[in-house]
Length: 267
Image (cartoon, rainbow, N blue to C red; front, side, top):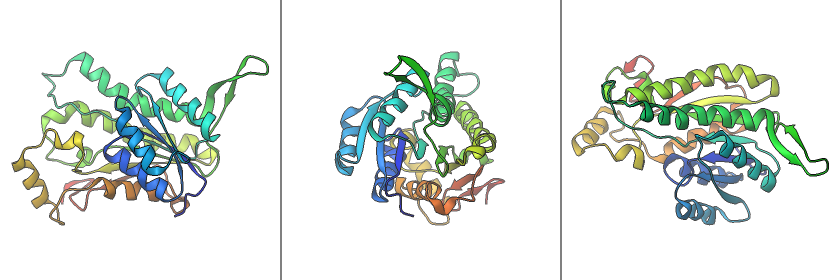
């Protein structure tokens, strides 16, 4: 599954699944844009681990279309195109229906849904770059045939035991799964595939922050493998969906959870 010469744009790449994905795709030969929001030290550490000749860190708030456009423009200026697009940036706040504020709801959807949506649009259709020759804006598509988009959801969208506190988060990720399904039909005419990886419990800072030892032990015991996922487990599946080996896979949401759950709930 060689990715030699490919260009990967990954948001949320300074930590967690995004970081593991950046390192895995670079290992497979890709040049990598390490998108991050608030931690330049962590992002630059990923760049240094990959090598400054093959990677660059770019700051962007993925909930802002203007910053998304700038992120894509800087990617094109450095590498010339985008072959692999992996929007890993996401937020999770645990609140019930009663507890959810409009501000929290809007922020959740801005990062988890709006960000991936417009990143796909700007990358694959009409990023506006300044044409210095005539000072006019020129619409340039930057993802050609054979490119891959991999979105991120959650196995919680398929579990019957999900608790009320995950309501806003799972609602946003459900939107991502529908985006995957329909977007794949939209960009198929451009030769671009779109898939979604839906991890189960995975040892990221975002997930571990809200888990008690009792809950972690329950999740480990519930899994046939007796553990929760590691970020590398998810990155490996993303790498497959970024390779030509997945050329006949599109519009799919793949539950990457070690057999913990499937689309009907817990096994």
